[in-house]
Length: 518
Image (cartoon, rainbow, N blue to C red; front, side, top):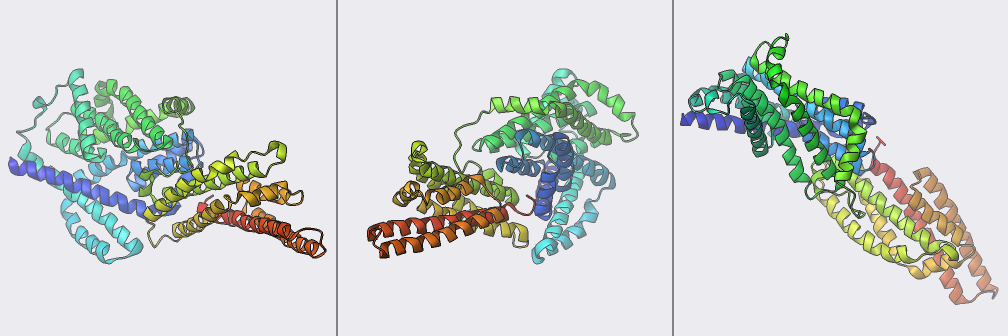
């Protein structure tokens, strides 16, 4: 019996490790193209649900897809309501793992056949490079998954006397509720509903548990996966905490709908051509109750979003609020968060400069005086964020975005330094000739122009500055102005020239950092 327990635990460990390895490799293989497709397909909740289900089935990780959606919300590319569709679909897509386990792993028993595949895939993963290594790691993870499942099946005979249907909570409603709680606890401990579903399928096939007990446990497993998101979001921003809460409420709602249908599920599911045995019926039940939950919640998406927004209200937002540590696990999403932060910093600088350069009756130097306290912490966080962000060397699009962000951060740092030159800014604001181009430059920071628009503006401003500088020197030579006034004028013009260049470069690198999908 001890050997059976140890073997079963080892099988679970291999399954979990194989699942993690396969998921990480699939996410890495998907790369930027998958993110672009998800962004294009999430403009409505229904399309978001379909794409969320499809992508989760492809990468075998609802958490990864949810993090992508959070990143899009954080970057301002999607509303929170639109991201909920992805969340609903991801819950449906994650049930595909159960079908793979039931139809391929259990019925075909591929554990032995997976051993030579694991050997070849491990060699490829160790000695290969780039996409070849990722494909090999994916196959190695899949092999470990099947080997672990095979070990669980062969070891379950050794623990038949330890666990029987009679020793588990009974088939009454109280017993089923206890099985839900048991499933919830298992998912919380293993951080994987897929491993829990695999265990339920193995126990169900051996007769260790009955179908209603397994179905109740599967409901609990779905609930248990939400606890990981709740814990991960505890120190995160508003979007992450809202998404985690929405996932919890959605799964609670789905469980409340599915739990009373357990008596009806057995005869109905077994009557279908897809579910002629208990194991297939269980994965069909898992898919159907998640699908029904998504169909019920989809028409209520807008109201559901407002409810979650009331439960998790906005809080004072710093310029670097988008830089949530949980997003670093996905390079594309992390880059989106960095772009949003850099964009917020440029806009804040533009707003402060516009207030300081406004006509005298509307001028407000307060925002400019407060700007360093906003920009400096955000710059430090952004620089730290980029230093922690790892982009694989064989992803040219993401590497190009990373490079653009580094240039963008450099220009923001220099713009922050020039925003402290209050004397030159005041001279520009008081000059009838210089105030207008200075305000145009500040507005270009605030309004996020296209790179070509920013380029035309900087050419006009710099041409004006050169002409005005020559004029100032000629007026001094003719004795019309004092030399000290010439220095003030040329210093202010030099400031305007440099800030205009920063504004154009910020627009240019912002476009590159956003990537070709936007």
